[in-house]
Amino acid sequence: MLGVTVWFLVSFSGSATAVSPAIPDVPAPPGDTLAVIGGYVLHETDLALIRADEGAIESWTRDQILACAALEAGLENPSVSRFVQARARQLYLRDLMTDEITLSVPVPTEEEIIVFMYSDPELYLIERHYFQIIAADSAMADSIHTRLGWGQNFQVTAQNISTGQKAGIGGDLGFATGAEMLANGLPEHIARLDGLSPVVPSSLGWHIFKVSETRDIQDSLRAVESAGQLLYRQRVEAAMDSVIQATSDRLSTEVI
Image (cartoon, rainbow, N blue to C red):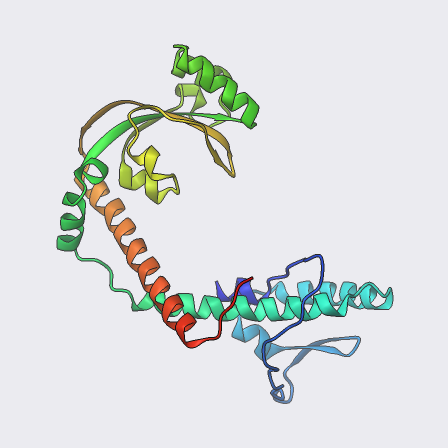
């Protein structure tokens, strides 16, 4: 995560003024230079800090040459550059704090997970037999959903129209607990679904789910694992919210 943040580039329209304090330059040790492009230097210690791979030198060299070309062409907006630098540092520090918080949260014990599961049996102790159709656009998804509501066969429709990987078997996703659906990023109403779902948008397309039957959990190990992941995620999010609230109380914060 840290390496991704440091090499992160963001493009913005408009301008902003960087408000983060200046970071003093630390002289690099002798013999540490890996590349020099137009006065800009890449140090071996810099790459070691972010655990970059062998291709990082070539990537940096190519990117720096293009950056120099942009400067020569007068393309830089100094305000945007300052904001991008501040934003990259912000994300780097955010990831440091996120990692710190995540590592500080204890992994739930099996006993805690069992108590958590029994706190909401419908979500954690019942498996639903899910089917799914994925449509390419919202208009098509709405049309499919209307026809399904009129009684059109879900599995035949999935075979003929769905773009999902399970289309060939009628969109059959098999049995899953609500915790597994939540762990996959689906909203809670899908985790508790009975019958036909509304259209659910995602980065993959527009989804329609159907639950044909329910049963008590058959694979308890899988159910405990998914519930444990969800419980741990909730604890991390709660710890994150706590840090955000406590820090906000100490800072002068105003969002307009």
